Amino acid sequence: MAAETIIYHNPNCGTSRKVLGMLQEAGAKPRVVEYLKTPPSRAELLDLLQRMGMPPRQLLRRRGTPFDALGLDDPTKTDDELVDAILAHPILMERPVVATPRGVRLCRPAEKVQGLLG
Image (cartoon, rainbow, N blue to C red; front, side, top):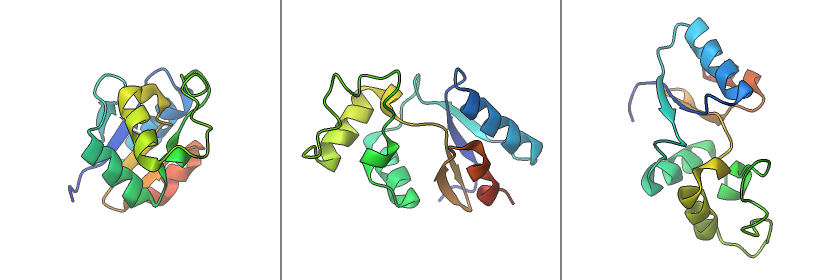
């Protein structure tokens, strides 16, 4: 596992900007991945989910996304189908996700990043 800090960031999201600022204030020099421009690969996404202990359904963002149009609230959708949807439409990934040597978290609300800071 890399010893770097990575934030999967959307610069248009206030929470994402706040978490990035909190990381920088704590002295971290995170690698910023604008996931809408550079989405994670399937392997990266599955690794993040596994390290968060989170099923794909919990990482889905509904507001401002094609969530409803894709019928993603259907409980019969499999994890693979949900991962496929996130990969096809990265805007479906809730943000920000922060990966550090101390763990990986979906930092919503922003204060959740505190447990990842050294």
